[in-house]
Image 1 (cartoon, one colour):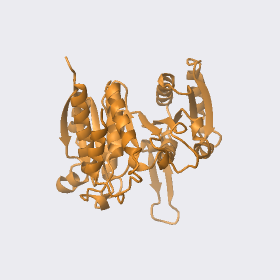
Image 2 (cartoon, rainbow, N blue to C red):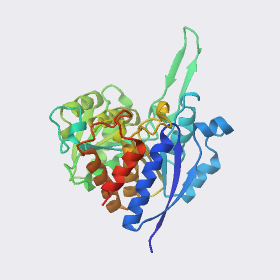
Image 3 (tube, rainbow, N blue to C red):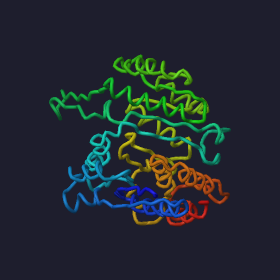
Image 4 (cartoon, one colour):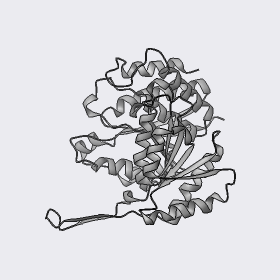
Length: 353
């Protein structure tokens, strides 16, 4: 009997609902092709909902997600009418922390050479995955201000690393590297020479690595890693790093693969409900114009399918994305490229086989 995958959908703000519509069209199409079953429920929580009701993310909704869904799909969050970070922290960070989504998984794969800003780099050169720790570091929310709004003001924010938190994400990265058909090289990115608390990362990386003799261990400080990602991206296979540094280097990686319009991420707890999203923002100035490229949103569907144990279907979506982006008449993924949001969706659907 075919399993029914239960999906919670948060279209969110700005262009989020538009790109999510196209992503769900692709999900429905691949489900029909492969005989998959999905049950979806849409949730209104985002900035518009907050402005109308004053409600952010109720505890009962979070518990519903935890208990009754296999995956969460998020379009985009953010609205200039709301205090910066207020809704984002409640919805996105709320899911990450309350559902313990300790892995932020960011594939960095170039589908079409013409979209890479680096001279002479090919699709074979840019194919890496960044495993970013997702629940600790400076994002843990331990901060404060002393003598606020005075010349003597002091602002403090703590970087927090626990043995359990560091080890579980490093172990996840080793397993991913072992299962990827690439270089079998895992690179730790930190700044332990200057941020001495990050010595816990280098120690745990080496200790856990003893259990994975088939994986080559590599190390780079974050400033050098940024340099090498531009100079020699082909060096990297799987990267594991802290929450803060992962946030930075994955946007650099997104640009290597063609920009925010093609990049997606997974917020994952293996074996539990996990959340998938395009990494671009809500782009409120394009809201309702039907000009935004939904490729990143479709890529989030591909990641979600893989997480749900449907790798064949995920591969079909990835191949369709590649076919569309390699088309001669596709020269840009910007809002001014002349391809509408729905036409992008049509093209992906036509490429599905």
